[in-house]
Length: 169
Image (cartoon, one colour):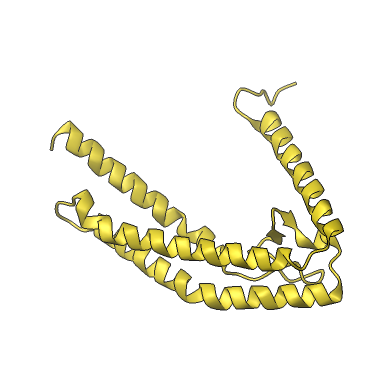
């Protein structure tokens, strides 16, 4: 095997490993809000629009509507997620099978994975728009403010924990 072919093969294996590793977040997206302090709609972690919706003090009617929107989203996303997992599993099996493998051999599966992810993204965007349409201007402003604060906190965390920072005083 030439160096160029070896690099291509390792690139394919690395890419496929990344694709397989990304299958877990997809499953998390299709999960509902966590149970606990009342409805906290989101893709498994209470976040939608980049902020936890429970911080926006949704009215009971808004909470009910959000719950309905997310239920519809999950029902629509479930078969796509299942098909995505199946396709990614098939790609993983193909990558680990004996014999030569060329990039073209995986093209149809990669294209199908891309299309399925695009469908999930479209569904997610529509659900987010549907939830956003329920919010008052005050709630949207609060969401923007909360998102900015969260972004600032993430930035501070990266500065504190980033490479080159010392853990010793």
